[in-house]
Amino acid sequence: MPFARKPQVFSASINELTLGTGDNAITLGGQNVYNLYTFDGPIANAPKIGIDVSDEAEQPSPGLTAFYEGCTTMADKAKKAAALEHVDFVNLHFASADPNGANKSVEDCVADAKAVAEAIDKPIVISGCKNPEKDAELFSKIAEALQGKNILVLSAREENYKGIAAGVGLAYGQKVGAESAVDINLAKQLNVLITQMGLDGKNIAMNVGSAAAGYGFEYVVSTLERVKAAALGQNDNTLQMPIITPVGSETWAVKEATASVEDAPEWGGQEERGIDMEVETATACLAYGSDAVILKHPESIKTVSQLIAALM
Image 1 (cartoon, rainbow, N blue to C red):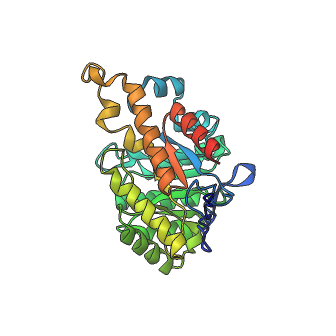
Image 2 (cartoon, rainbow, N blue to C red):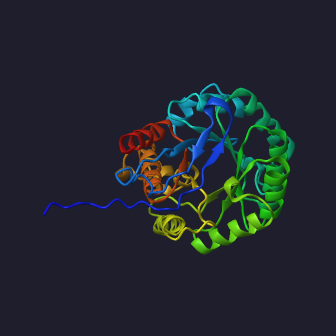
Image 3 (cartoon, rainbow, N blue to C red):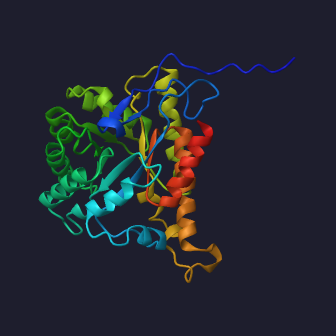
């Protein structure tokens, strides 16, 4: 007898989350099948690709250096990045705000964010410096300055979710990213805590954790898989938020991407290694549950976009 495959379609679905405004607005989520399982059912919203634009110098890469040549401000970089084919949104990464680093002021970060918003018409995501107190203040001030732009901030964590949920989501109607540490129970708990403050779960995205392939990455994909299985198979509405994963900042920081050819000649070209790490990590994230990935290198973006197009 011929094999007749039964499609695996769920009655539950992932929430739809819209970012940006106008013709360039994007929607994440909405599917009631597993990621990229177009053979089981139609997927209205293909996975999205963001580009990471940092206010610090990019990781050593001749390709990235050449791409941003002539850009003197964050707005210049963002405008160049937003015009790149296959980029759906721009992630503004305020790494220099770290009090233990350059300690860039909130006011200067807000000024940069406003300049970028005036320079581009793609949706904007905001990433901070991983300092809970500084990020909470930074996100609230940027959310106020960019009212009406329908931005997403990454991320509200256990240490600062109250200030971010209130100062970003409730006060200014922006979208909130909930960041947890590679554990389905922590992801669920944080979503519950944020919604208990009054923020609609449909205005939340999740970052359930990220790592470069080979660096504890099995925990990342296992968590992604378990979250999507609970959201769809168990109709768990505390886990039905779309997932966005910052890939570029992780993969371009590991030794495979940073070691020079002189230090590791047997590994081949440094830039090619960095691109490979970024592509491999991003494709695995998309296959296991991410609805959007944030990348750095134009070649990585081109390659991952081709994969998405081929599978959709």
